[in-house]
Length: 232
Image: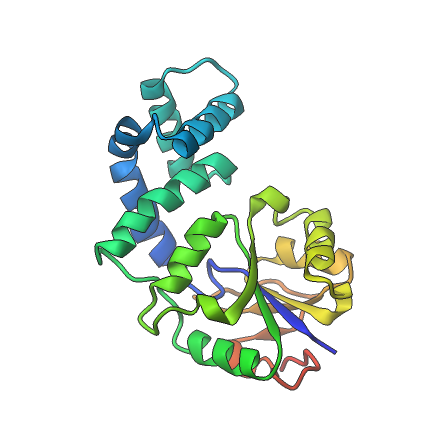
């Protein structure tokens, strides 16, 4: 019996184009100015130190900015960079430069599942702060009250089975009581290794292969909230 749903974001709740064509370019365009204006803020200073350590060299701020811009271009999943991006996006959301994109079926499904007693969680390579910003500034309103928790790469990589074991422990459910939804076979495979129920969501022309995982075209076809995890 499924008691909790764990959601990927990119390609599952949110279009890849929103992330890659709007969010990433916005962060890249504003990164240098943000670092120069806020580098003495304690949290920003800590993240810059973490990014500098990850880069493996004693880079000054300007060289570090160039390195982080290269990481953005390469879509690197680097935790301090993701946290800095979230801070930059916060201003974009607040100023109304964009809203968090959701596929049309997502908000109604999340409300329906939460009302039926399912606990909802997010696991994304984007920082928890960025996750809350996206779901807090959608065209459907602030959806954060629907969620019971959020996870990012601080708990581990999305292709690492141990990440899902840790998430199950934090959620407090048996792994088989958690349904993980994603569009990435490698992530679904990792979750299945520790006995999470899995489902592949076929957005944006995603084809798979998803041999070991049930598939659905959208959230309306998942078989929830029947609390069985059945997918069609």
